[in-house]
Length: 431
Image 1 (cartoon, one colour):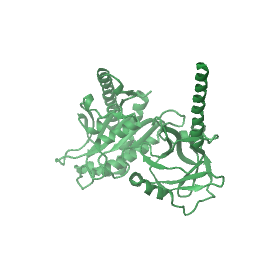
Image 2 (cartoon, rainbow, N blue to C red):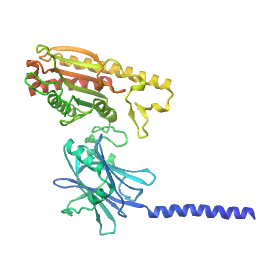
Image 3 (cartoon, rainbow, N blue to C red):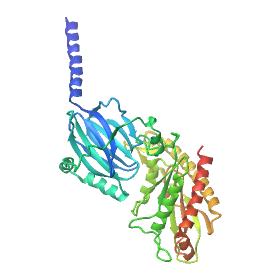
Image 4 (cartoon, rainbow, N blue to C red):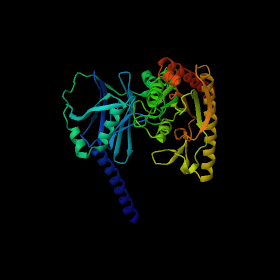
């Protein structure tokens, strides 16, 4: 008899458990469609759901992306992959993920800085609800302003934004459903960082060689001031953009800038950008100055002394753990951490030297003086992993060097030689 009541109790427990799961599932929001379209002035993403739900939007960098947070939802768009893109029509990669209990994220990876024009809910004729997001490419500054605006919104303020009605629904705007990444040749050509591993891919689908270029100074920090009042920060940015363009025209290489506008970035944040992007090399471009107006020429620097393990600025994972390469350091004992750290530092130093040798070889034919290679404790070179060099392109305190650095042809030639050196480095050492 006891066994009978035991099995009866077990049956009701199991039944209640699965019944509660069924009820929970029935109460969950459903994602029923995901589409995107291109307007003359903006891109539109439409998320179709079974009900209108609380919504939050966060903007992030590296890569540029919008994260739409909604309550836990079920993916019911059966003909659309959970991760995909809208190529060749719209340059957006998306992914759907239930990150935490009770929370769902739809992430839109976008290749350039962007701003949100409008975000609003609409009702669909079939009874579904539609979250409509209109966005357009913008400057880095506009992106930062939009990002900070959304961060500062209270729940009530954001709900009022969602309640704004569009001037026109643009019903004629053609919308495309998402497709699998692997099915789109265009998606392989756009070099957008994937959300999961921050890698870039070339047109064959293999990882690109990633170069992060750092235009020294910027914003409130003008750097050196030239013989004729030229600002170092301006020359550094112009040169960096030219180098980026040249590298991006080379098959298998993708180049990013730590800044693309006249903004100030903390020195440590510059190499952290490279760490987050998982760059293969880091190049910081500068223009030197001296009290002596006769001093001129280019030079190249690498780090002379790495910080101790406990002072190193490691990349953090989503659990705020220190990461070195592909190793979670916090999961290792101190002795192992020290061994791994020294191993990575030795590798970084050796490859930084290989890179500077190739650059100096290429620059030797420039109509300028070489001041050679030096080791300095520059903060911007302190990435624990990435081979890093700092190039002083010349002395803007010298009349001749300043003239050269303001000459677009000279700068283009200088950047071309650096691009050749980077290509040789990739071909020889990164096979």
